[in-house]
Image (cartoon, rainbow, N blue to C red; front, top):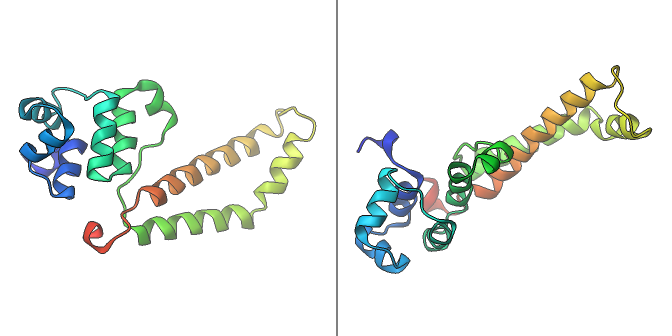
Length: 153
């Protein structure tokens, strides 16, 4: 299977160092069922996906599973880039510093003071909202980044 065709379930199992047989045994599923998850033929239920998250020690799998299993989750949870801890940290700190330097906190208070977003305030409000979405994405990437040298290779 080409690298780009791997599902998150197979990628995380391999990264955790489990054979398909051993993972299936520990997850209490058949090897065939695990193979179907990994081939993208089936999406595992949340209970099995949760067991995979714990077994493979992968919060990234949890996010990607939710995005693939639920249109609602996909509309709320941003698509994350699997990045190193170093990259995630730099992205988060840089984005937050830019946000803080623009004094978005004070601008938000000014917009919200009358509890109404008027036509004049709408462009700034929308810009701040996009920046907050980008900060949320950066926070999640930081939280999902591998934290040991083995995983970042």
